Image (tube, rainbow, N blue to C red; front, side, top):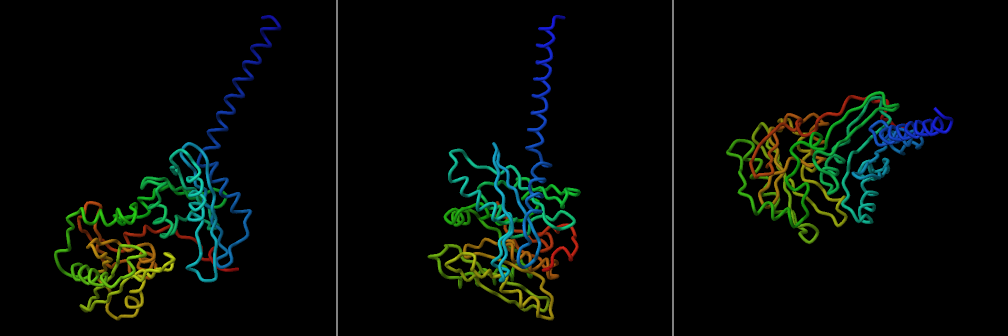
Length: 322
């Protein structure tokens, strides 16, 4: 073979090798490993937040390319703290507003300071599930520092029995309820809780802030009933959830709670929202039967423990102020 042909063959081989290497790099760059590694690097670079000293970073990737990043921000009043996933979705809202193409989340990657992967908290599960940029099947991948351990799941798996309203706007919520023939519990504590919660919902005012009213009721083993209604606030995040208002009654009574319902004024029963799920499951009331409507209007009950699939255990020492 002539020298010229050797040079051409060598150049072709080098070009093929470079193309192959670039293709491998691009496949890695858009892989779970690469995005988790990015989240881990950002986590390691951040100072610990002020209250928990527990760093969390979320990297949200988009179908068609691009990503946003969020980290947890804490305040001295714990309720005012904002999780990594929600700060990332705040940035995503701006990206979507500027984009000419539909915005769709491909995956949410999360790395935190715990020695084991931890799935998102209930508030972030509910927030992401209701986002117009996600689907129930949207992937969520979490990893431990150094990516030694990881968990892959979906929003649907993380938030069982999501509210039928979860992906609807205010107008569509009422339309959904009025277009269904809603079943109701046939009797027993579930029916008593449903009826009492429906009655309590009538006391929730301020329809000028939002048209849906909520009431909650819990039935105890001794036959007694406690109720509460939602109190809307001009700043939505300051709204008082009715299930949360029942916490003192549930925690302080000698009789065990046996059934709980969260019902709006249109008769739709919702499994407790994030804060209510957290209270029931994290404070020892996972056996309470909760009443809910499915997305067809059928009625059902399940133990509260089914509503919050437990995250893996982690060391308590990872989650303390230092």
